[in-house]
Length: 465
Ligand code: GLU
Image 1: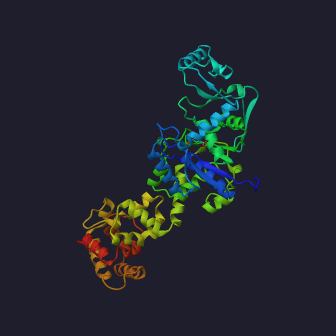
Image 2: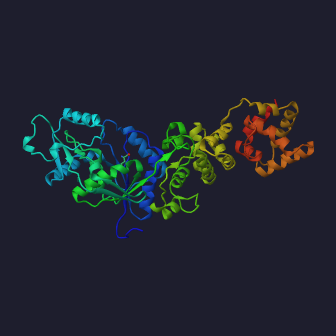
Image 3: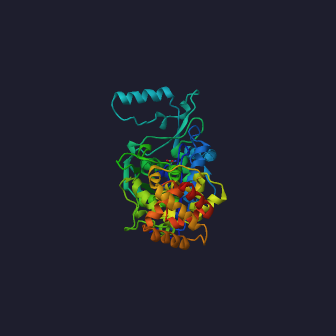
């Protein structure tokens, strides 16, 4: 439990150097749910300090992915690059207070030190001579960097809310650069200054950042700032235990959208991936907010299970609003004709029962967009025997009059089946072939109604001919 007098403030801090990976999406979701659970705030900071690798396109992809997932942040998006003068200001304050120093090592000296460490087969940990040297000795032709004067004794301890207590001996950490010679901040320094200024209380992120927490803790301490609580969550792996990559399947959030997953299904899946609450599997957003806390986050790496995600998606698809599914399907099929859109909408209750993804759903609706004359697949063609064609002609005549409703059509087809000694299925299958060019569709009465009398009879007559 947390102190209730403290406003919980979390953030998602993506680097816009690539896609919004589902690992990042899960980090964003956990930060979002945690802040909402405690009635706090969830902020977004785009870490674009690396101007060479950051792109506006990547920023847009991240924003679009978060929007699609319904992970909304509070306040303005903070762009880290716009805060460089503040990062420099803090570095100078640290310099003044003696918690940092100017280091004049030249690139050649640094290389020599690195090579010497390699020759002596020991790990290279820079101990700059400038830590204790008189700045009056500084060479005039080297622009200094500013380094943290890190403690050399004792240890740095991180009380991680997921990983437990993790510690490192301070001799293992060198005096990292906080401000480069061109006056730009390093990533580790910028993160701390920003998290402090944004009053972040909990840093929830991938456990690939765990070792950064040591160095970042030292920067907090040097400034006399409160250290936020850290929670490093295990990464997502593929089913084979290897780091999740393209060869396992989709990895970027927008790719999941393309492949026909619903955002609520993906969020539910990501929530359960690495977090648990009893055996609850299906959780709405509100339930997730009510239940989410960091003590439910496991320490083992999670494995991505695409089959499980697909099953969850099928569940959400059956619950989704018809109009929403229709809009998505017609967009996927590129349909703009209102008459065809109406057909898709009318048949949606039947179509969505048999699809697991939006891609499957769109595929199953394709026949509604067909324009006569169209081809039949092999199984459908085989159903259209001379005898079946005679029957189809009869069906067309029967359905010409009377109400064109499910009930009336059902009664008419049963009448034809009875009169000709056929089973209802033997009547329905050739009609299905005629209407769709395939052998699968929702129930035949619903399919006929969705197509409308004119289109349905035109298709039946074309197949009978
Ligand atoms: N920008 C970092 C990343 O995208 C995240 C840093 C953090 O959360 O502290 O991996």
